Image 1 (cartoon, one colour):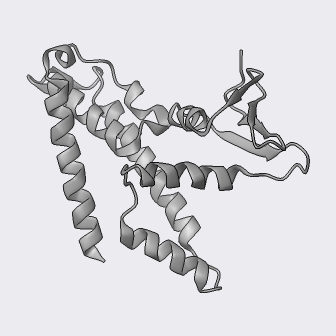
Image 2: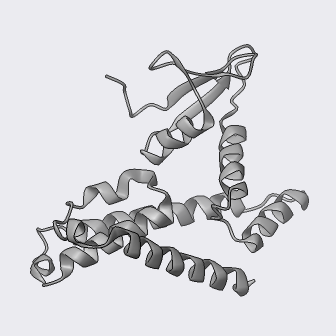
Length: 185
């Protein structure tokens, strides 16, 4: 059994192929993206030089998702990131982004914990459908990272709801939020 507390070590060979040291097989960027979505940390190193290539590959995964129209970062945020690199000054951007994601993850975890059956509000009529909708929204917002949605029980109302309609509504809400965020700049 793999130790999931340690980062999954991926070695890059001279041929640029990526090798999963736990399963002894080759993996793709999509596989690595899946490991991360499932809550696993990864470390990618060059076999010959030992250089840590993790940041380079994570940025490549983000760039590929963005190029397929799976926009997560508004253009204003991307501009700010580029500016922070080009000023030559030490930027607080990395710490700010890390703190923001930590707060988002903590908030999601607390919200999902509050929606469990131990909470008296769980007996409220219609809560199961609302939980299913919230879980789908959180999964769409985060791409499933951190396994936040898995901490809530699977509601039985989920099977009764029309998942395609819910997903479309959530996608529209997400697009509206992204548009509002980009207008803030």
